[in-house]
Image 1 (cartoon, rainbow, N blue to C red):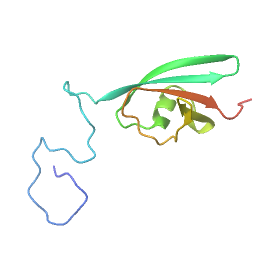
Image 2: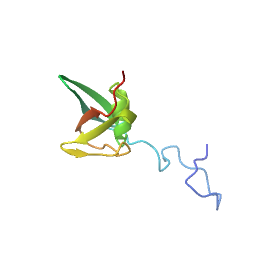
Image 3: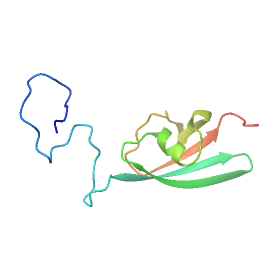
Image 4: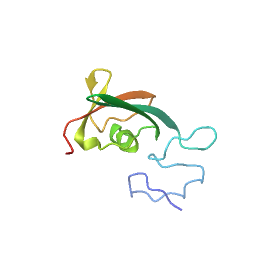
Length: 105
């Protein structure tokens, strides 16, 4: 099978089976997809909940928030005391603080 590397010019030999496309996921020694552990703190008036999720290395804040059971589009996400964009890639263990920005009443 031929893998595309972004250019259709110069049809060369088929790639060796061990070759990976540039967009291939990182893998750990055991062959499983590398993951990072993300702690998601949902802060609400009167109560808070904490969820821990494992996401693939490079997954976005949006993915981590969604996997924790929250809707990323209706909240603000902070790392420490700084707001972060939902498309920020996560490549190390991180603690996210999620604050709802709308009422679902």
